[in-house]
Length: 96
Image (cartoon, rainbow, N blue to C red; front, side, top):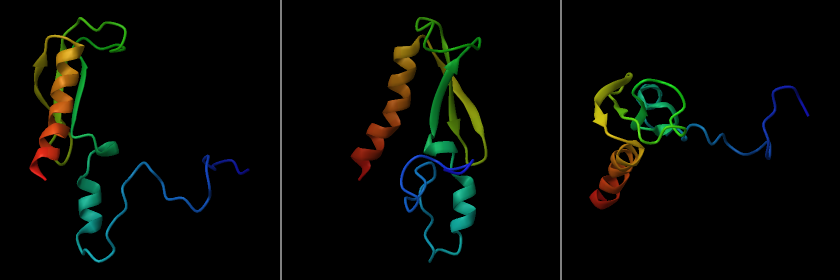
């Protein structure tokens, strides 16, 4: 096993980044515009630290603007922040 090998079969594509369409001339550009791990909304503890340790503290909500994450508001606690993050996924499913 090599120094930089990852677990799994060597013929498996990476799961970290979705595949790029070879027929699309703007595919490389679109790939750079995607957020890390395709997370368009995220939350972080307002005062830093590990979020799972203090679930009752406020959270900063952030959205991906195509270049970086930008502030979108605050949530009073971890449960409300998770509901906001998962709200986007529910909206996407209903749009299809």
